Image: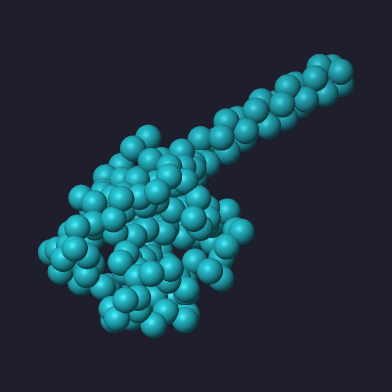
Length: 173
C-alpha cells in the first residue's frame, strides 16, 4: 500500500510539472511578430529615416522608412513598446551627429543628433549597415521634432498584439 501511494504521488508530481511547462510555453511573449505600417506626421508621409521600437525589457527593434513612408520590423515581442522616429536631413553632406552645421549652406536639421548613438552595439541598434536606401526627391523630406527620435524619451507608445504579422501605423502629431 505504501509503495502504491508513493508511485501515485510521483505520477501526480510529474503530471503537474508537465502541465506547468505547457502553460509556461504558451505564455511566452514571443519575439516572432513582424510589425509593419506607415509613418505620418500631421497627415504628411514621412519619407526618410528609421523607426525604433523599445520593448518592456529595454531591447530595441529597428526598421528603415521607405520613400512611401512604410516600415517593417521583424521579431518584435508582443506587448507595449515605446516608439522613436528618427528622420535626419538626407541632403546634408556627411552629417556628424551632434556637430551638424548643415551642408552646402543648407540649414541644420533639429533632429541632427542621432539618438541611437548612445545605444550602438546593443541588440537591434546598428548604424550604416545594409544596402544604401534611395533618398527622397527634393521637397519631399521635412524635419520632425527632435523629441520624437529617441524611444526612451518620446511620448509615443504602441501595443504590439500577438500574431505573425501586424499592421501598426504610426501617426505623429
